[in-house]
Picture 1 (tube, rainbow, N blue to C red):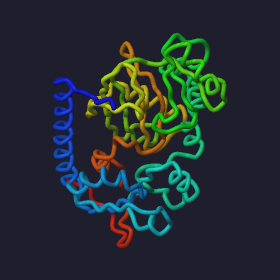
Picture 2 (picture 1 turned 180 degrees about the vertical axis):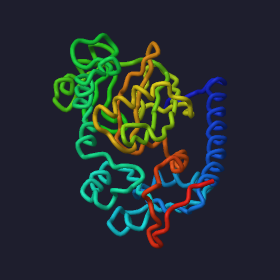
Picture 3 (picture 1 turned 135 degrees about the vertical axis):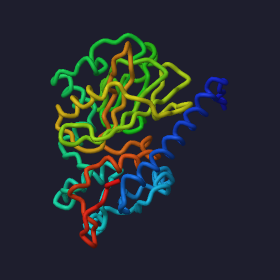
Picture 4 (picture 1 turned 90 degrees about the vertical axis):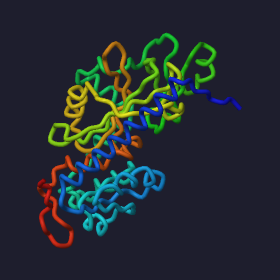
Length: 304
């Protein structure tokens, strides 16, 4: 078994990122209490693994969170519904009359399907004038390039093609309609920008940087040595992209940077895993004007 070793630089980066995260969470938990005099009831999909990552930061706030099945009764009993899975997003599309005032919009079924299909997504963005922000798709590539499954999660079916021998090994998939080839953007850093998008503008966002030991990582397959919060200088690009496809809701833009230009690898039209510890900070930025307490009907008070 190969043991991964870390240099002092890697260890320092990991420690620094954890400290940054803790300071962010402490500051935002204080801001959350100052911003709201109301105890919000928030319903998340029942995903046990993510529950453990989401809950601790909410324990520092006054809000009450529940993880459970999304149903008409449970939706009506909460101020905010946060679906964590594509299947729950599809269900909420079927009961839109129940979530019309949800502070985070639910993406339409059309945009869900578009973002879920990487081939259709890339082609649509190219047609809408965003080709400069999409790694080249199709044609002849120099090595290395990447082979992807058009509908996939966590990079499970993504493969780096490093040479002609590997090309031969993957020939069946290279010629399969469920797969496509794309230029590979090298670099040891990858980013995930989590965005709440409503009325053609970014309501709130947070950017996560992943650091890897290799210049050719596949996020989801390769473990990062650290991840940290950092500024995102490309929000105007992402806003234009989301507007162009008619997206509304919570999403995660995965991208890499080459020569100061972001290259969008995918947009996940759902809650992204790296948002878990920080999602609580989004709550105070949402539009609560139309929200009411489920039982009493009293308006929420977010004044300071």
